[in-house]
Image (tube, rainbow, N blue to C red; front, side):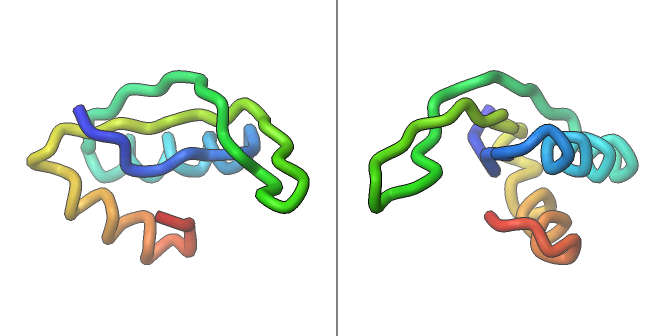
Length: 70
């Protein structure tokens, strides 16, 4: 499994999960620290979505088409 996106809000994580579910992409989720504000070095928890390496390009295209950062 390879990380493909870090969702920084619950609504973003829900959107990614629905997107992958609808497209039949198998994924895993885990919480991890993410640097939200690089100027002040504030760290938040984010949801890391990981997909099989065979689905990485498909996943990136889905995320791009949905307007989510990759």
